[in-house]
Image 1: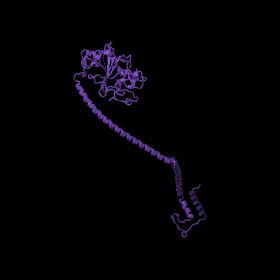
Image 2: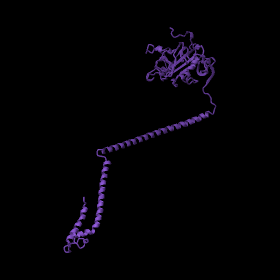
Image 3: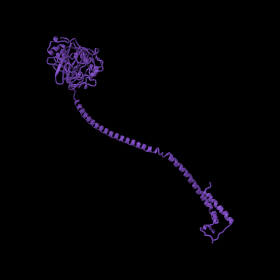
Image 4: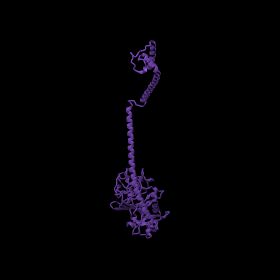
Length: 433
């Protein structure tokens, strides 16, 4: 296609040929010269031809430059339009997707704000924890200062030779009655060595004014000692012996066996009980002894001597089953603990009741049970299984009454007549009418 500039460039050629043909020369009379660059010619076609011929080269050059510039502008415009279209297609989301962008950014902003809030809460919690730890640190520092003061006091005391504050009596013997026979009249701590024992051991001897010496093998009085122990602990003994007999303990099955089987002389067992109203009672058993560990420390006695506490070791009819009395008797039963089940029950009586004892299925007398302050307790108090696990003696108080104080102590059977004021030959055995 020919541009408009090409059409104008062909015009002077046509005018030049026309002027040469007709050779028209106007005069000043009929000519008005508007521009001196036309010379003496009026602005007729011939004058214009002359003008154009004179200035054509410069005009052509400028027109070519202008045409190139316009072409560049046109090309640039096309490129610009293409770029704009690409930007619109690639960068600007379509109307259908645009609305989803804003909620996305809004959700992200909310998540960031929530995260900031969580961090702020965490910081607040950490500050509270730091404050608590600071308070604990202050308390610990105060305790450290007190301990330092106590240490200084102890160091000052240790500058002097240490003295044993627990008084242990000098006399020794086979048991506490042997010690009383040697002249001891003061209750307290003594060392004894039964005939078959490998070494001597400490016991509490209860000695009265008549010269009766009881060897105490068990003491309950305030619940300070946990009697839920394993087989080895019941074998060796646990708790603490004190000169005034104000502590709880179990002497130890091995020691009780050594005392009660050292000679052919039989021993008597006395059980002392006290309830929470201050009333007391007792039960005596003749020819009491424990078997050895191979025999699982079996409880053996010949008969119930007497006592207002009644014979719970012979069992008790609780009214639950016709066999209650038979299944709760204790004579001849092996000793059981939670880790050594030797009872007659399908389950583990010692584990259920939390103690070590001569269990059958399970018991009518249980002096190593749980200490319930106040005495009375319920199935709910005893735990989810509802077992009568207190310190009970069913022939004196119910199975749901736990004693305040108990003691188990032994003495040679020959001395029991002196204690009770009875003749041992006249004692009624179980089964007599």
